[in-house]
Image (tube, rainbow, N blue to C red; front, side):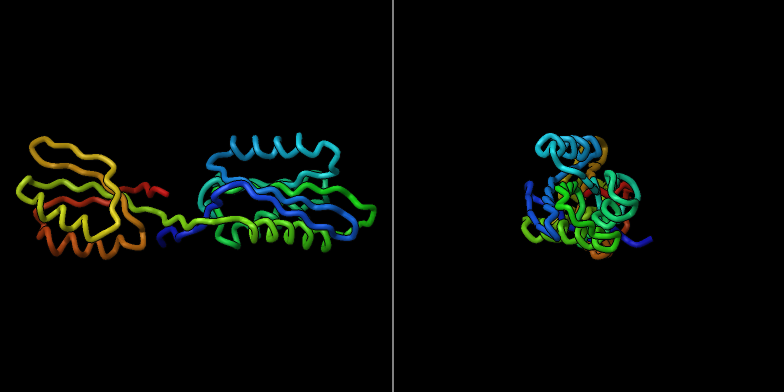
Length: 210
């Protein structure tokens, strides 16, 4: 199984507007981390533009390659001409934790199915071009258990990587849980094996944090 790859998340809300054959397309994008936030943003856009003909939308609440936390809607446009193409633009740009709504005011000229796909895709690309994005590097989580005599060695190991300490307990042994970028996990495991000489127990946890 391959490790999750880095992706990009929006820093703040953004908007872009296009006119295509007299139809007005307003693309609004918002950072979201769950479906409730996405649905709330969609309803907010409906309330902002009550006279619009369509409010098509797509969202990805986590990683862009995730199979859950995703959704899309054509909102009355011909099936497959809006929501899914919008979602494809988001995920194709490696953007996650985002919801985009494209509001359309019909200008009197029908675009056809191909024209609609192009228009809604273009609207999402336009708002992404205006959006400040930051890189999100998925994390690998570890639990490490060791004797107090290894404290200096463990600290030296952790300091060589971009480690975030999640939890630490001091009983008969020291137990800590930490996370670091997935891209560093192979090197971290190799250096841990070399420096700790089997005197500590290192376990990679199943869950990976974003």
